[in-house]
Image (cartoon, rainbow, N blue to C red; front, side):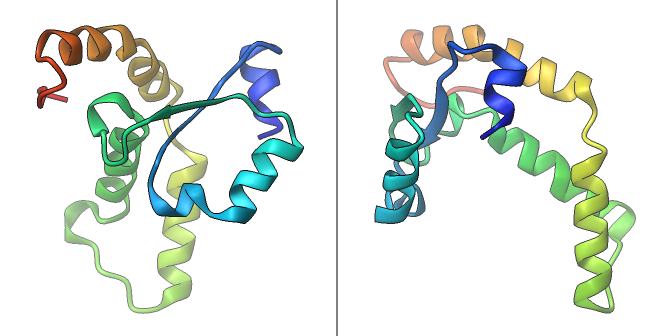
Length: 115
């Protein structure tokens, strides 16, 4: 989380859903001890969580052209390589989609959206 202030200045909020892994005692303690402001929203609310689109892009990139891996090390290398090469334009597009996502969720009264 050292990148939060570098990317967004000192007035930033960490977005998480309420999935069980994010509510573990150690995770909560970490956020509290590091004075991290959290933005909570319902678990599995992919409409409001553009990181899910980022994970999808990464998975498609790792397995593009039907690529299968023979070893865990080869898979690990592909994942790390993909992680290191996420296009900045993808992250910018996902971040800039938030106002549209929020607007659509509000218009659908919390129902499913096309995101």
